Amino acid sequence: MSAAASAPASAAATETGATAPAASGSASAPAAPAAAEAPRGDLEAALLDDKVVAQVLPDATVMAGWEEEKRRVDTADHKVTCAGAAAASCAGKPLSGSVRFSSGDVVVRFLVDTLPSRDAAGQRLKESYASYAAGQFTKLDMPALGSESQAFQGPLAEGEGVGIVLRSGTVVASVTSEGGPVDVARTRRLAVMLVKRIEQAQSGKTPDAGLGVG
Image (cartoon, rainbow, N blue to C red):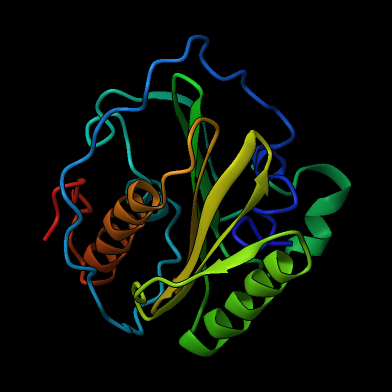
């Protein structure tokens, strides 16, 4: 099961089962700039370099005011996610990565899966949609992000939240926000940023887009 596809079942499961406790207190999450126009593209470039996958995931620089709690990025030999007896089953497995941030009671997670082609990514996206549809999630009306996307609201690991699952060319990704008041607009802004970082990497640029991307 891919990182992006398994998000609604338990976002923490994509982080090797380790669930870092949310920061205490009821402080609200940092405010983000006004929503930017969603970048759009359907690039064929495949991101099969683990160093590039690591760069695509947001870091503390662009997530100012948030605490990074856990980061995991697969390696080309899959030692991160397929150690031991499971290694044999990971031949040809796409690279994946995830990072978790928190602020007060709010937890956000970014998850990416790289695929060798747009067709393969499209199939993975269908699996991701199905995992949400199988749970107690409501589909949200939201303009598309990247090549195609869907947004959902429902129960996540830290409480009621929003999940956006998307495909940008050959990459399938998801952004979830949970804990505290449900904030659809914030989740969308984070997803816009992630799509832009993916597109930068697919264009051969170093991903540096932040929340103010246009």
